[in-house]
Image (cartoon, rainbow, N blue to C red):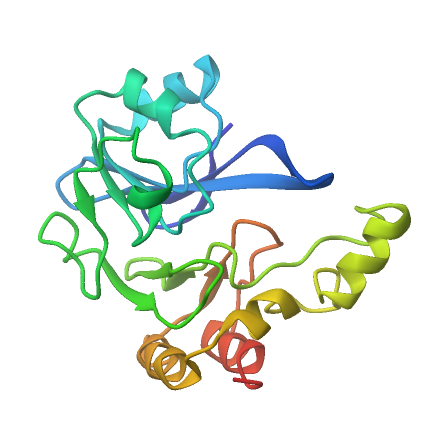
Length: 227
């Protein structure tokens, strides 16, 4: 159920979601902070088995919605873990005014996890404002939707054609074309990426795609060299 990805970080896969007929696998990260509490990044659908596995690691205290597109399962988690604080990317509050959001994510980590994580808001995109994280103990950068890769054969028919044109099935994880076009303020985006490239990244994790486990900083530079 939980797969260790590095020191104090685990991954879990959830049920697929569907958007306009496109199937998306889901993945979340569990980070155990220095104080022992758990931070859940991009929560997937909650199951009893997942709850049991989490209880063995620690207490869930923080739920993180890293962009305004990853919110489908937050209600389940709020009900199961009422003591957890919900930290959401800019824009999610306007999209989901039914959610009680405890804090909006910004540039720079809050005190609750400043010793374990750094974060940068990637500004300038019309589709969503994504908050990218760096987990220091494992050297992992966590992207949500700005970088994606789907395996060959994942999509069928005309959806496969759209996915190929959108770079969703490129040989290496890439920024989909729709997100590239949506960067209307490229100067702001470049400033955000410059900060991300300062991190000593070894690994890169994304919600939709196989993790990159070496030369993380070089990979990120290649993924955004078009910017």
